[in-house]
Amino acid sequence: MRILVFGATGSQQFYIIEEAKKRGAEVIAATSTETSFEKLRQAGAVPVLGNISNAAQMLEITKGIDAIAFMIPVSLPNPFDGLEFSKNVIDAAKENGVKKIVWNTSGWLEDQKTGMPTDDVKLDVKDYLVASGLDCVIIEPTIYMENMMGGFCAPFVTNEKKLAYPTPQTMPIGWIASRDVSTLVVEAIYTPNLTADSFRVSGLENLKGDELAERFSKGIGEKIVYYAQPPTEFKDILAPFVGAAAAAAVASYYQDLQNATQYPSKFNPNMHEVLEKLPVKMTSVEQWAKENKGFFIK
Image 1 (cartoon, helix red, strand yellow):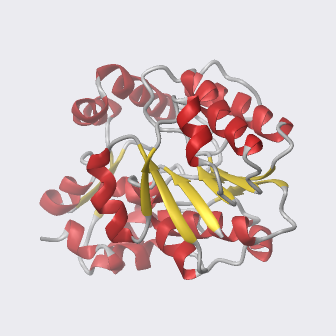
Image 2 (image 1 turned 135 degrees about the vertical axis):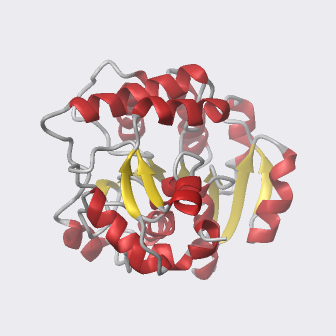
């Protein structure tokens, strides 16, 4: 099995390399810059230059590929480019006889368009992928535990013993580990009877802020309290990394949550049904925090 992975330099797709190699796959990792080659080689992948904006390049690197683990770049300057870039990959896969595409959507898809470009374009990508006739599986993860490693959260844990996140204390979330998502993606690639399926996935615990902090505290062995970070503070910390406009857009979403009387669901209570089809041992928040203690406690 030759698997082509997009987004492998980031935390959302990186573990696909290791999990696919456990199954005996040859993993080819596409990256837009050669500066990532060494990281990908050390992880066990064969790096190739591949910018999804380049249709000819996509046609070239998908030759001889059996399956694709796909992801749209999270921070495109123009979100609507996500559709055209996805078409480049999907069309190339179809032309070259790729057997299956598994798409990590980086979040749950909306039921209908909402006017938010980053969300709406994913619905167009979904329609195009399904209509392509390729065998495909769509994995829709909820919020990643790795988000807690961001600059808006981790320093608060280290310096102030606060678990900072811009969601209300009363909002429950089924946090999921990126390794678990990667393992679900690999399972979907290797499960032959999944050919046009979508799965909303979450962790197995639906935790409010104080419950999240409690599990996190047990994992790292220190008392940590939840801090519902003001969206304005979150925006100021995030802006140097993603730009002012992107940070403001994300902060606006979190401000809406702070003002909400009813929260969107971020937990799948039927994960046992997903795990019957994609048997993966899921990671608890406590376990994840214990494994990553050294990142937070210096």
